[in-house]
Length: 281
Image (tube, rainbow, N blue to C red):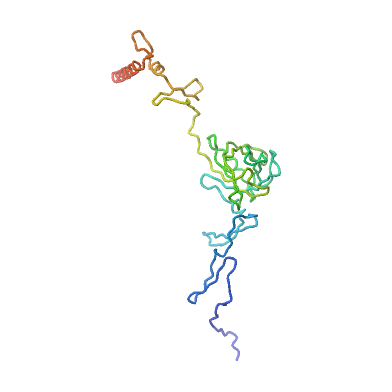
């Protein structure tokens, strides 16, 4: 007799010789085998030589699908977050010329990096994304300081620079970023070919106007425009306030050099103004 469709069910024990590796652990407790990540088994990295050759494991929490992405691609794909940007570029230190540094690159206008006053930045980041619109928005603030930036070597956060941005100038194939360096980990923290992360936080808009005041003033003084330009303020003397109110020196009137008499005249003028107002009502 032939039993071609016979099925036999038998418990097959999990192979006792199975071991975990590469950050995956295999264990058994209470008859139950568990396979799970073991991050303690992984070496701790303090620097990454090539972000393009280093990948991380990611989960799309919406689709439930796992995938991998290189560190360079991950950083290059960081979109605008809050008031800032994060873009990855390759440092081109082969030249300081005012020219397009090449696809996905940036360069300084000085051999000594923390003495640079201009960054020449390509219109494409290290991941090949066109970031022209992002670069052109960096100086949109109406404040004189457009924002704060930082450059950090990907994989080694101890190598970095910080500073401010004052302007962005259009050039064919790249942009000129006018900068001031505020701090750096060394005079020239980056090596040619380093992948660096450019982060930028925009300044708030100016409150409007460009009026500046005197270098010092007396508490409680009244300020008035100085000149017809509308950009300078001056502290008013009591005589100027009285003149504005039509209380200049008159025969038998207050002596303008006497502050006490000036204050009395000012109070009297206010009283007359209030009386006239109420009479008109």
